[in-house]
Length: 568
Image (cartoon, rainbow, N blue to C red; front, side):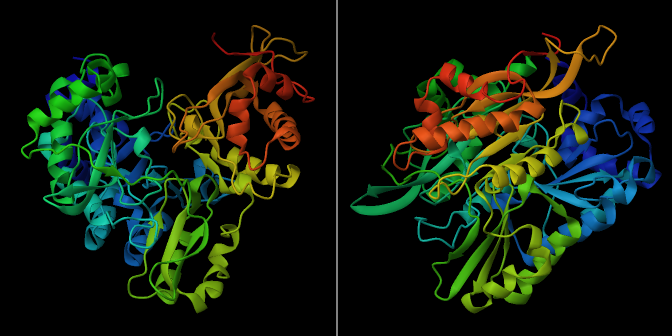
């Protein structure tokens, strides 16, 4: 077994939750925690939703799970106030001025419909958990080698494009796996998505398990249920999920997901941490053999597929939209890179209560935006005019609308480059400097600070992956060897999900960050001249040869080529 597996054998990871309360009572430092429990405790703490905080010793990132992205206004207000009170930087790291764009006490909405907070101290965790438990929230298994937050359509129950509301199924599956010791120690993280909508905004193609709407005639009657994909994922070795020949009634969903987890638990690799993800197992066995393994472990008989009801892929719900309930609408707010103040999120929750009906909710989307639902039509204008919404208006430019960014080097041990501030600044600059076609509502620009793909760059129109870049020719040097080392990124084009799903091509590598915007200006100038009627940017990128795309990028008055990844 690898080192992480040995740590999990020494102590069940869920046992760390009780330990956290003891560490908090003693206000233990990182050194004291490690002296007591060993280095493996940093891995086990992930099962409590806690990650060590990059270079900042004695502080954590805390991840809150939000199944299907659904929050009541009360839950959202608690999350916002917790960020206000506890996600605060110490003076030695900048205090209220730690970040020139967001200040202090902010939170991040993630691509998995979670909430992340920074600068959390161990002694504050029991108080946070107490507030969470009072409104039905949890951080348990927000991280670690088990079932992560279960994704769903953020507008479940609201839109006419859904076949049925799958949010109750999302919540049931999440409840089954959360705290379940039998399935809390898998070979690696286990990601599920469940949706009843036709537009697959819950991204079934890039998850370990993706359940999408279907119907099947059984004994002469039609029944709604799910079709299944398995083995999708990004990071290194990205893979689109494979379809299985199964039809799953909603009442059998927990058992089906349990059987998949059981197969992964028994057959998955626990030796090489780099190839332990479930997608590698599906690739190794083949989808048919993996399906057989699931059927052998499933206590219900799985029928063959019925009629697939997925039409395509919708990447966001930004804007004001009518609900299927008469006289009600929802508003999707644009949060560039997912970051906003805790006070702003708490105010959004209060506004949802003020303007919405008793069914009002705050929903988190996989594009790092949020939605306020069940607003009477005659109150929508007042809602979007509230002060909290000034920076998150539901009618953004195409680059702001499609901008996604991971945590980056600011707080992540793996991050090579800074991402959040760069994404926000670039999105606004690009909307000012690039004139896009009127029918192009969104340009999906995703930036990951490393190769781990937390920002999902492989499925974006434009994807970035952080690098440090050594420039071949420069009059300046930044290290003892005389090299010029700058922040840079691999530059990819042409990704998408849906009926024409494909991962992007990494068209140029090791591009210095100051050359990216000039390169994009050249690309969009060529796109505007060459696009066919209605052709989207990612479609044009696929149609044009990669060598030609590089040639277009190199027209920029910047060093687009000529750099190499530092260390290569």
